[in-house]
Image (tube, rainbow, N blue to C red; front, side, top):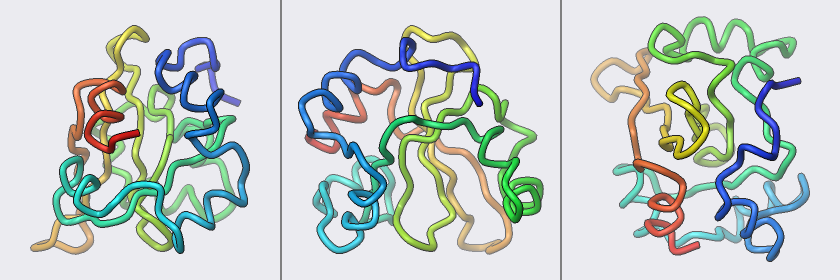
Length: 148
């Protein structure tokens, strides 16, 4: 599993989990596709062009962990823009719903105190190309944008 432990999670994320405001089970992820936890207008403040966010439950996994799956190594090597991020420093905390193939990560490359929140954007003019976009300077800004 990952080198990143729950001890390095932002305090606000831990508080949201403890308060039950962040999903705590796998079943809650699927239900978010039908009953979103965040309104579309708030999602667009974080990621223009997107309208749904699904928040992942702990334990969170890094992209390096996800890329070890049966089908996922091909996806990540081809579309993950792994040349611009460190997969072992990228903790997946959400995505944009079923079929989006666009994770939202806490990016710990520069340290653990205030990791920025990035998301994988699919380029509209080049559908097979992706890039990582900073949606928030840190988790507190992310949570404020989404009104969590």
